[in-house]
Image (tube, rainbow, N blue to C red; front, side):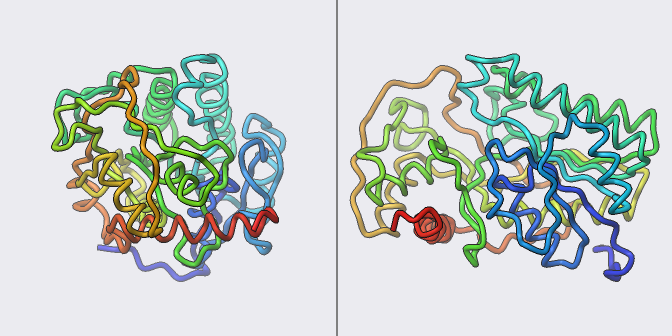
Length: 341
């Protein structure tokens, strides 16, 4: 049953990394649903334009205990949604200490500050990378977690810290393990803005719009219908909606913590995605077939049964062409924001 809460009773939510891709969509989802919200972001990879003008934005670091204490006091913070961190898997292999610092050490500082201030609810942006290369697909929450890169380990360590902290202190938490997040706000208020992003749909759209001359297809000999890797793509706005519902669930049952996959439970291959981009943009993208990348599983699809059983989550954008169309609209608006089109 969904918690019915008047806006006057909704606690203030601090969104870390709220000027980034997923965080900015969570800010919109909270704001649209009447939750008081504030953002902390160091703007290393986030963008000030991604935060609505009426949402307080603190430019700073989640490792800054003094700043966090100030924010918690000024807003009577009752919950944290934690998106801040580094997310590029190959970079994590090349520079592991950066990832253990940004994603693990800084998360520890944030959790400690939350405990000190008595913030009772914590939602954490985790990843399917915690599963590594699973032997089965679809992937359930109890599938063995064996990360194969520092990015996955840095996230899994934070999951462990949250579990241990909730056992010892008056805090409950929700870990949401994302699969492949894509798309943009249907009203084009925010979207994936990072230059050099590695997400397939963004890369393909940049190629369709002439910003890249081709799209590389890594691996054509997987045990999948067309030989290319299959992934579960979830619309970022549906993902943001899941965060708001998760927060309601934590408030409704403060003695319960949750760990859930976020995906649709259905996969598309790389070639199917590129075909869809061709279809939506009415252009033909050049595809270059290349060797597999080390550690890429052939298929990575979520089993979303738990989140659907636990939350009243009803995705509104579970359609590949819709995901691509929304991302395309954002790419065009982003060009205008940057004065390139």
